Amino acid sequence: MLLTPESKVIIQGITEPLGSLYAAQMKAYGTNIVAGISAGHSGQFVHGIPVFDLVEQALPAVGAVDSTIIFVQPYSALDAALEAIAAGIKQIILTTIGIPPLDMVCLLRKAEATKTIVLGPGSAGIIIPGKLLLGTHESEFYTPGHIGIISRSGKPLTGEVALALTKAGLGQSIGVSLGNDAIVGASFVQWLQFLAEDKHTKAIVWVGQTGGGGEEAAAEYIAKAVDKPVVVYIAGRHTPVDKVLGDAGAIIVSQLSGPVTYSGTASRKIAAFEQAKIPVAERPSQIPDLVKKALKK
Image (cartoon, rainbow, N blue to C red; front, side, top):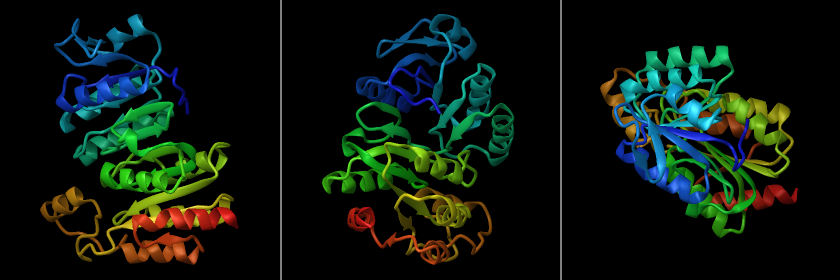
């Protein structure tokens, strides 16, 4: 991955309310945003960022782009992502939630074929404290350090965990939000491997939630391949067993979208980590103490 302050970034949907809001925050943090994309707004500037109708129209002006952050509406997200891939952009962050599942299947097939990294849907993006903000993370909660955070939960809980670590004197090397929709692009194992090999990361905090089977696979991978300390928190311990998704929005959606399964409950995920002898916090405020204890071993 190319995650440096010099990395070129575009924002698709920059004239959307959230696109404009977070474009200003990312630019203020020092992120190298070279262009915004919004059809029908070419020639305009948003927070001093030039806007183009299409990605392919921006490239001659700004050169090759490393990452895009997508804020468009759910039913436009697939087209936006495919446009980015066609332009050779290798890192895509989807902040949009509620992207149709079949659209995500199509996107992930294309991403796999082109070796494109996709975070989201519903991703808060990536933050490298003090250096780079790609997305919607609350940057004031983070401080530079050596704890890597990988989160399947939304921005509020991820930020709460970061703030707890910061208050305990445990800065972060990176915060990665994988997204919390049913089908997400990021491979859990891929990010664990990335942080396991990252020389700036001394310990990893995994923030999971109910639903899906990624945590069970992560527990197995950590036990076999990760030498660094890992501490886990699973959100949704008190989620009703017939509504297994831990994110509040996802729980509401599950009530509207048909039957749910009993796989992926918090108890099953916690059992998987405990079986792998990985410390599991009962609440976010407990995470810093478990990290300090793990680092002393």
